[in-house]
Amino acid sequence: MAIIDKLWLKKVINHSKLHEGEVNVCHYVVSKGLSKGENYASLTYRCAVVYQVQNEGQEERRLDLFIKTLPFGEQHKAAMEEFGAFVREAAFYQELLPDMRKNVDDVGAPKWCYPDAPICVFSQKDGPDATIVMLDLSLLGYRVGDRQNGVTEDEARIALRSLAKFHANGIEIARKLGSDYNSSAKYPDILKPPFDSNVMRDFMKGNLVFRHMENSLRKIPGHEAKADRLKKYLDNTCVDGAERLLLMRQFKGNPALNTYQLGDCWVNNMMFRDGDDEKGNKRVRGIRQLDFQLVQAGSLFPDLHYFFGSSTNIELRRKTKTLLKEEYYPVLFQVLSELKAPLKPTDYTFDDFWKEFQAGKEFTLLTGMFVLPIIMARKDDIPDYQENDLAIEDFQSMTEGVMAGESSHKILERFADIVQEMIDDGVI
Image (tube, rainbow, N blue to C red):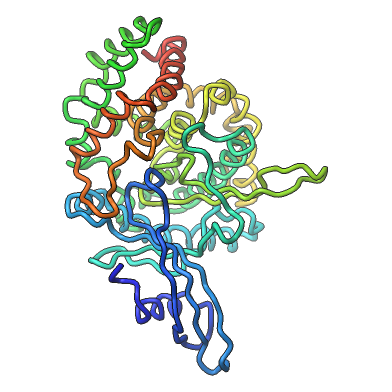
């Protein structure tokens, strides 16, 4: 990649403030960052850099970086620029995350209350060399989950605790901003919903993506009644998929819970670190949230619905209430208490929380229709956007092809259960 050279790496490491002196890059090795299907918004690279620090002798040091750059193709790049993907993520690392951490420190809360974000050493929000550069978590013991089968229960529990921590920090930032929360005064780059864009409207034109799911469901014996209910919902309620997604993502609930959404919290936008528990059993002990390219102001509930709709299997999703009650809700209020927030669990009980969660449940259905064919696709079904452009039509063709291919059975098994849940709960 043209942007990665010794001069640029020197700029990145100097900017990181990892050392007091300037550095000289000795040599470096660049490799591909992710496989197809693990990220659709960026080109990714891993870079092992060997360097020396000026005035500290000849000792060589090594830094392992994970680098995200704008996509290669012009249409793909234009779509990500309209979403503001790099602008948002850079704004998160440069503005929102430091403010969250500062607030934790200012109120004397423990550092475990910090959001579970990776260490970003450099970010540039726009221009042809827009980049996000982080320490490579894979070399720090972190791994991705299974996008085909979804998170394990261990992974789901730690993910929900992590989401609660992020949302609690956002609640306090939003509360202290007051009227500026809904204005562009503080974080202008992350205020507007990213899906409020022509790119999303073009992608959802004619509800083709949702209709593919309805038609695929109808072809499976025994699911015709579910497909009929889904068709009725698409004919009468979700006539315009893009606008419906926007509406449900903006669901607010209790205004005291105004916060910042991660926006894209699915299994491969998290990395997990394993370790032994007190009995010597392997457990998930750590997590880092990734891809803050869709961060936005809004309610906490869409993140939760997105997570359950995109990243949990049938068995786990049936434990939604239990998982939220045991993991998300108590950690949310534990962190709020540490942050000295005025909102208490006596003011907003779990029953209150669950009622509002249920009220926005339609977003789980929308998420399932929208992202399951994309995130559960086999690698062979995914276009190679490392070397070629990726237009809206390519995405549409991909989802249609996935639902006609070998991946469809597993996708539809999970999706059919979501549809049945929506029917049972009176959502559709």
